[in-house]
Image 1 (cartoon, rainbow, N blue to C red):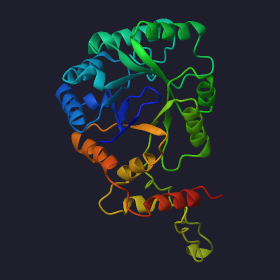
Image 2 (image 1 turned 180 degrees about the horizontal axis):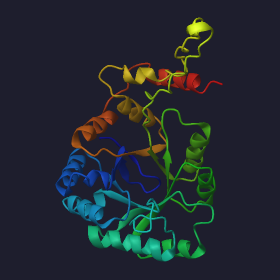
Image 3 (image 1 turned 60 degrees about the vertical axis):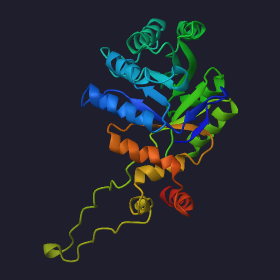
Image 4 (image 1 turned 90 degrees about the vertical axis):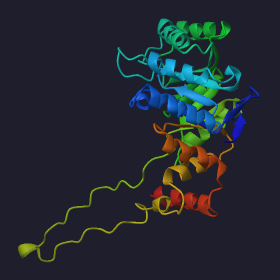
Length: 301
């Protein structure tokens, strides 16, 4: 595993951040612990709780209790849930966020949370009382840093405030200029940058166009249009020997020096091992240039 500076803190963070939540616990507590222990053995020192759900917090705390707390970094996502019964429900109130952080600390026994991450808050979702609560959480040492996550245009406004220490942004091989410019702006604000959604399976094809019949019994009917280079621009990702497309995309994102860490979400140790090995591997010669060419083709008018 390789490490990069964590913003202006002077600390070093692993190239990969393991996202941990319900999916990782779907096969039971022991499977979740096995995944976390494998991540520690691979040198991953950055972990993201997907919600403030107590079981995930407890399991993560149990796994990390075996290492020096100062050597690992834990972030908690606030507002990523979908319903009122969800521990990560979209509650950006002062009481909701304070309760979520206290719940994670209680069940995990971690002592403090390195970063609280607000997940895609709208322009008017953060009241003054909410900001005051976040400041109070920092002052009491329950959280140390604040992050903002999302890919929408409103993120530009949040980045420009200078109130956040980190930006979590979707960033894949075909990321557009709005995302790339936002990353640059974040770095100019001395924010750490975490990339997520780094891999999209581009093998999905649009349904073939129907064959339109012409004339009696369909004689003279039109043919199905052949695939165009644009549709298969990234096909080489799935034909590169000894590499998975996901590992290529991960390695490509890590070529950007602005990215401190990439958030990954494997739920089994085999996939984790493939992803953990990617930062140590050099991309095949010419592959980065091929990706740039594919971006041009895929985005051509």
